[in-house]
Image (cartoon, rainbow, N blue to C red):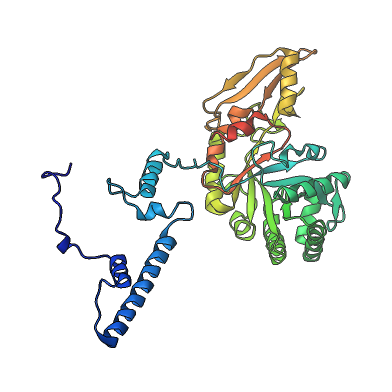
Length: 424
């Protein structure tokens, strides 16, 4: 019951007749007319009323949603809220609030790596079985002995297969070109050879419909730097005119230990993979991690200042070494191991894995790195240091401001890293 008691009836003399009532009274003669003029006026009024009624009905129909009956828009119940509006309010209240999509550390970044001959047959890197890789650099080519042309490693079959799969999976393909550092140095110092070599690289990219090329010319010296700059700048110009990409692989350095001119390289290339591994290499003074976290962070800081963060791709090692001391008491000599090799060796030797931590003899934080020792048949103690999912993941946060992450090499890693990457 409304507040203040029951509603009182309203005098009928105060109620304004509706348009439909007026029309009805006109039709049954309740409204008297006098003379022809009055009749004509009444006809005009009737015509106007008909037009008005027609228009009001059209508006009501037009305003009603297509999914609801028209009566829901014109019949108002005692509650004062249209049924359609009430339904929408109930639906909105019942609908859960939208949950924002979590931002992944590697969203929008380059994720990829290098494939060597034979491992490109594993199509998991091309078909989404692992963390969504978007760039690959198969090791298919090298500078030929003439310092100009490009030699192909292995057969052409995998090249055609991988290229087709990469294109259908929208994965950028930038095959790596390596070479003998002595031959490379001679070519770089010769302007004519440099130009011819660039032409050979362009012909390769165009003929195979690659997205670009990855230059992996290592072990160059300081006197090669200005010629390397000229080569990279000219190659970048040629590729960019053809809407292709240029990436380069650079050995990790800190400060004044850099042989090449990183600022100039950073201006020319689309991206540079900084190889933060082989800190302890095949030939080392003593066994240890291939990429301690503290050293990695210093290399990244230098790369940001010189190459630029948006041009720097963190290239992480996924392998290990099995080292033995030299017979003459000199450096340790190592043999490379994949993660699968390490697991087989652990099972064979029944060795126990330890995790190193703290600072090394140069003051770098090593992170936490798995390692173990075992004696061989001759009684020589082997020392094995390798990378597993935990040691790799502790390096990934360094990519926060960088262009992305690359792995050397794909098919050698602890493959549980791919599922764990999705959880970061």
